[in-house]
Length: 168
Picture 1 (tube, rainbow, N blue to C red):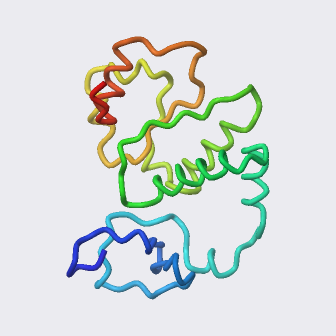
Picture 2 (picture 1 turned 90 degrees about the vertical axis):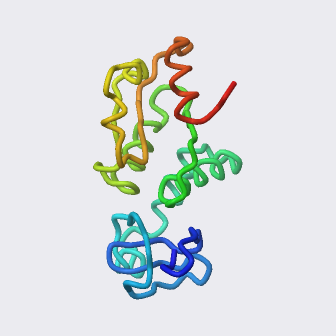
Picture 3 (picture 1 turned 90 degrees about the horizontal axis):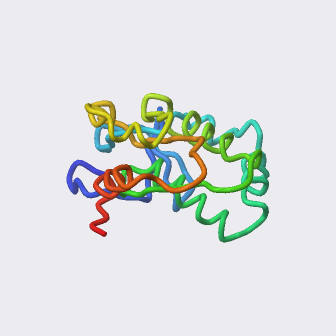
């Protein structure tokens, strides 16, 4: 956002030391004229000189089993998480054991957001604990990497609906 408009602009991503223009694929200098409430934990040098060019694309290929729809959804989830637009969404990565879901979760948590922006849950049932919402302040992602097989209990479903704004 610029200070004049105060409107979110999804064209720009705030970096540790500058602003990345997605449309022009250029990096602009940091300035007090830009207004961001968070930044990606990467520098402009990381973008200008990628160390492992192509590794992320191969990682996505492996995680999505080459399925373009799954790749697109995964990129949308990551985009929502790194943007300042905070949709109240609930995502589930589901699949066979040992297919990379935890690796993907660790990547999103550590590389994209940073540990301080995340809250790890051992079980969805923790959402029912007293005072859990106090732990959620300034968090962009709540995650539970090893969900049990089966359905969530009704109390947990009710809390998830409250968090995501789903009235049904």
